[in-house]
Length: 383
Image (cartoon, rainbow, N blue to C red; front, side):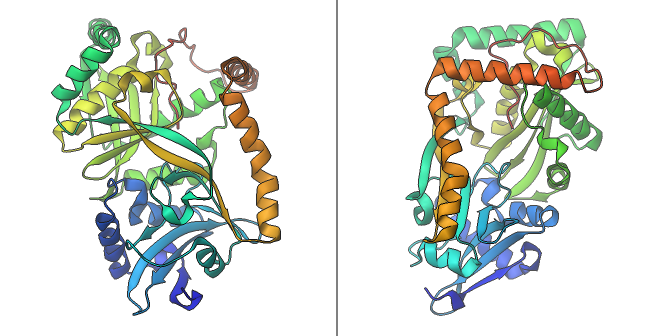
């Protein structure tokens, strides 16, 4: 395909017709209706990331046949997936069977490499360039919550019994437990981000909410209400006090679990687990068939999941100096991470090292509320 049939625009320059065509192409793809792949997510990133771009791809009859959202790097030639680092699903939205190769597309976009860390399965244009593949854990509630709970009770009876008992105990000691699937109070969203930042620091991880563009993105998406991509803040209350919350994105049928967190004061009740069960029930009642908990192994995901999707990490590159720089910049680190992940003892040492670094960092931060002893099965509030 000639590059003359590929034009690159800012997300905000897409017209109403483009948005509708994007949605139609995505709906015809046969893939799950994942909100990160909808135009609203790219439009939101475009508001907070000035280097965000979209390649609009036309066929030989000059009919729009695809969209490729990406971000240009600070240095020439380097591109990344839109919202790289926080987006949980990435790729192009193309008409099935469109004749196009990745190198031609990258050349038309003016980039020599395109890096991804959560490439959607089935993205044939880029899948051959994947360096690693990971499971993304899902909860299938398409047959209703009762069916899911029956399966969960058969597979993990002790886990379910213990979590429900903790919910009852939380109600007795802290006030009536209630759950709101779609909380519209922005003050609660700010509380969630504060909890999450504190959790990042405690565990020695990079605080995503220390970056203004991520805070602004989440706050903008909180107010986004498109059918295919809407911000959803779900909150577990004990009495009038929020004890756990989650902010994610939803379509009509998929809820992408993005930022869960809880108040450490209530850690002994496992509020994050209670929250996830309540979310699954309420989501099923609202027509959502799948909750995507994202990549990254965790004990609570193993307990809650019903299956897995696959996402890929890697980079598509054009031959030349840019490709060499991309490999030198990312592959050694990627191989080191893979080496550690495959060795539980090393992974445990790395985790303890991160937690020690977090404690040292906290000595330089304002004093945080005292955290209760960590529970092995409590969600670690992953990004």
